Length: 394
Ligand SMILES: O=C(O)CCC(=O)C(=O)O
Ligand SMILES: [Fe+2]
Image (cartoon, rainbow, N blue to C red):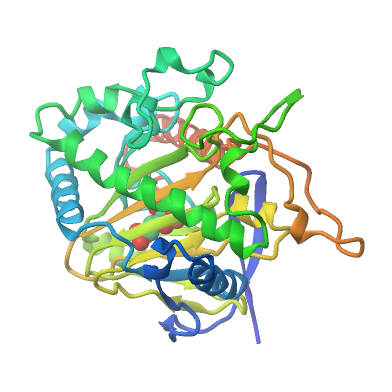
């Protein structure tokens, strides 16, 4: 059987995965289970443990699961999704007023069609996206002005105002996006406690312990909502739009979003009813993760896999929009503060299985850097090429 090698970009450089030579097939409920989150909201530890065991089983297997009864209201989701369409259906010149490559220091803003290529093994991505990152004044649990943030932490804040300046003309755009993002943040802050429990750690393991590079200290007995004791602030909201492919793109088999893993602890993903998300199983088989009404998809990111000494899997996934409809998806990437340096958790090591990794911050954005650098190189090549020459991938 001939397997193909898939090259992936990760935060720390390229890694390779084997892919079996079979067409993508539908997933089974065992491969991507649906977890009912209702017990997570219970005051009984035994109830919450039901969730953590289910998470553990899914995270060890394919690292992908659906959650239902997650508590985010359908109205908030619908409003947010229509704002994404309001933004994306504007003329390119208007969207380019917040063009990420031009105006952002931190990959916020608008990324146009085929303006990035997440997978070096595939084509450029047809996906367009709008991204914003955490700003303390938007925090639903403890809003703070940036000036109140300790000076040593402030440089790690990645929110940028130009994304809101350039979308002011769209009524309620910021309000509706932030409403959805806030709900995701609240949910993720609860879910990370279930992940901690699933690893036999205290539920507050990732809440209170703060480690600064160079000056380590542990702060317990502080409210998790007081900065900077709360480590769980890193997250970005990305709003993906997959236009239908042109005939040319269909012929050249352009991907919606190429194969990749996510970088942080975990991702919460809402997808509309169009479909197109695919997941690579442990065995190297592509399976389809179809939309299930009322659910979000949760997947493990590279940083979680590292902190778990590879016990939990950061799963390769990709999107192909083969339908004749445009598609919207809304991922929310959740991790720890960039000023935190975390090592492998104690429950995932033993004498015979020592930590494979050094402590590190989840702020390592090498993948984005690699993508951006390659993009600049390609742009330069394109501008130098005679107009009749098509440069690959563009
Ligand atoms: O659109 C999707 O279904 C997945 C998006 C995704 O994987 C990402 O943005 O990282
Ligand atoms: Fe992803």
